[in-house]
Amino acid sequence: MFVSGLLITAGLLTAIIFPTLYLAIAGFLLVGFGVSSVVPLAYGAAGKSTKVPTEIALTAVASIGFIGLLIGPPLIGLLAGVSSLRISFLAISFLGLSVALLSFVVKQDQN
Image (cartoon, rainbow, N blue to C red; front, side):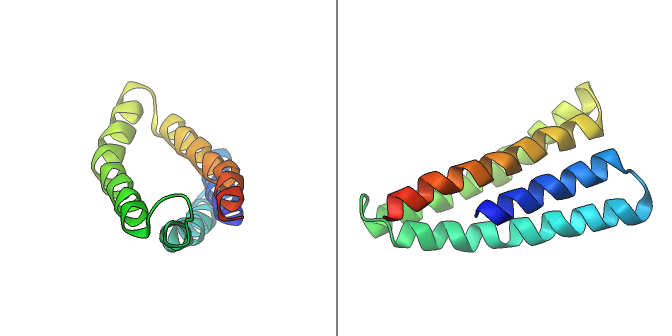
């Protein structure tokens, strides 16, 4: 999850700092690689949790994921409308960085 968060952050920052076609495509490619592994890793960590029963942990991960899918795009659009698309991408890059930092919490929970 740490590497996934760093890929998300690096990809979005690349697209923000270098808004040319090929570098933006490369940045979003990095974002795709980072995002694609977060969900399987989150479900795997929930299934291995020793503090919460497996069925509750998996339900919590699924619920948070669905809430993110419903609330995320309107919030990003609102932020982009109020400021700019670059600012909204910057906010998402901070979320990617938070995934990287929270990976240490998930790792400690599994130990």
